[in-house]
Each structure stands twice: as C-alpha cells, then as structure tokens.
Image 1 (cartoon, rainbow, N blue to C red):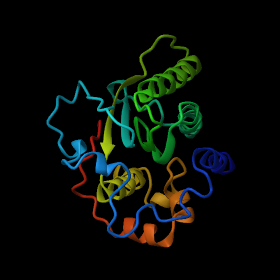
Image 2: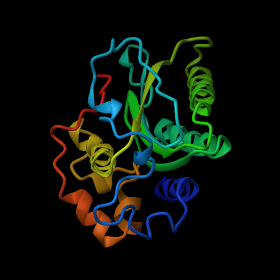
Image 3: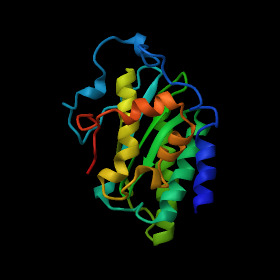
Image 4: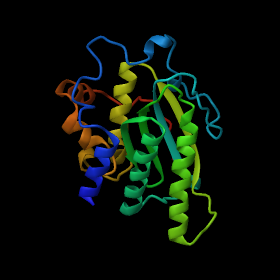
Length: 219
C-alpha cells in the first residue's frame, strides 16, 4: 500500500514542483493582481446546500466535496487509494495541476492550478465522481446508488490564503481524528510537501495558525 501511495504522489506532483519557493518574500500569490478585492472564499454567506462555483478566471482553486448524506463510502484504505489514483488521473486529463490534497472517510479537499479555462473543473469533478461512484456501487452491489452530494470551489488569490489552506488540508486528518501526525496519513500530500518543498516554504507553512481559516467543512 505504501509503495502504491508513493507512486500516486509521483503521478500528482512533479518532483521539481516544491523544489523552489512558491512566493518570494512580500510577493502576492499567482493571479492575485487580477483582483484586489477580498477573496471570495473569506465570506461564507451563501446557502450551503447550493454551493456556488466562481469559475471566472484562471488561478489556483480550493475544492471540497462530500459524499451523499455524509455516508463514509471512503472509509476503507483501498477506496481511499482508488479515489486518490482517480483524482490524479482526471486532474492530469483536464490540465489541472494538483498542489495539495487529502482524502477522508466522507469528504475530500484539494488545491489545484487551473488551465486557461477553469470551467473544465465541472467536467473534472463530474468524471471523478462518476468513476468512483460506479466502482463503489459495483463493489457493494448497489447500482445507481447516489454516492456524491456536491462540491464547493473558491479562487485562492493571496499568498497568506494559499499557505493557510495548504496547512489546513494537511492537518485535516488530525482534525477529524484519523491521524495524530499529518505526515503519517498516507492519503494526503503532507509528507510529499515536507520532503520536496523548499525549507523556507515549509517553515512558512508550519508557522501559520489555521484556527480561523474559513474553509467549508461539509460535516
């Protein structure tokens, strides 16, 4: 299993991706110069059961999705592994570059850089959910069962917002009681980040407080 997870990480992120600092000191995050208003993800005053999709410009997006009625369809290690393998494949297929990810029992988070046309995220998520739902239902003998509920996306526009969400994703298994150490959780990018990011980026993320990070948690 650990060998399989390592191979999946290699599929998702090139070895050189974290080898340089993500941002220079004092610099804005990529695409932040397009909009100087407050990032949309900072405000959660929309109806949570009709999640908006702000796919208006290329950039780095935070994506969250949950299973239908929060049923833990992803509880087994084999299913988490299969889901992660599928996530890596479909992001590559649609031209999205994964930056961070975590797969839990009934939901997942990832951050990824979009291609020039960010509206491809809808097709990416549709295929991800279709392939995984079909496999789970075939395994359980429940054809046609609804597995996925919805997904939420938000454009990440500032350096501080990006780094805080990176840490939030990596500490999610600890938050939900699935691990004591985020580096020991196989179905996230935490260990890959720790091993391949520049020392300055790792220190910057480790020093962040995430208790006030406003990320929609579907449970």
